Length: 319
Image 1 (spheres, rainbow, N blue to C red):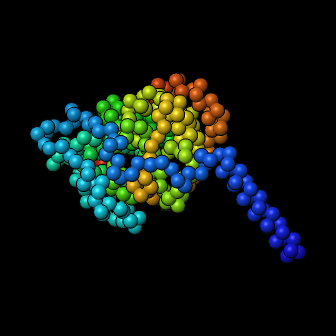
Image 2 (cartoon, one colour):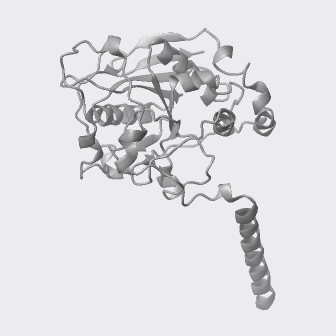
Image 3 (cartoon, rainbow, N blue to C red):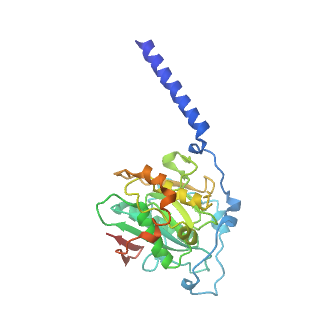
């Protein structure tokens, strides 16, 4: 009996190894333990530096520099420090901040899809204001709140936030899940010349990239590029698929995303109860991705949202 059980276990083990080897041979992109990345010495050269001049009143200030934050030996943040009280200057109404002691070369809109996570929202806001102000950038935080009981539509919320941020003339969009917290100040919240997968080294994946075409969690993209691909698909109701569809749109437009090296792009995920409704039609939608791109995205959004200016963020309510 024991011998049969051992033999069965051994056969299962061999089968598992064989399947893993076949996946590695025929689908190498599913394994991305090692990937090309921008090291810290080349980060500044990869960035697209552009600010909203109309928002920056004092042009007599010296330009902000970013070498200090990049090469600070104390850049790494311990996970236990994430929930600690953080010191930061109060932003203006709507969650906008402009450095007072220098003229920023970076203006970024931080767009966060949201529903019913008050505790996480508080942690995220207090941490991210401190984090971004240390980087000496001009930013504004947009929380896009789905106020219904339908399956969560992350991509649609990001599209609505992006549309409003672009109307506020932000040249750089940071599309950011609420539960992700950056762990290195050198991970500058700016756009690169190509779209950037910012959260490629996540603790829940043991700081490994699961597959090379992953483009979700926290990402950055120029407003001009986001318009050019017509944003994300609005049809992925529920969890899963919208990030892969997003990558397909980028790939069709020759916008292959880049990544900073793992020590810079490390994140932790805030613990929360996962109550995810799976997107049932995601595989069919992915097959039709190229056919839908021009009519499904930024140009197909409802206008029935409202905007409220809160002390720490711009609140966009989507019924």
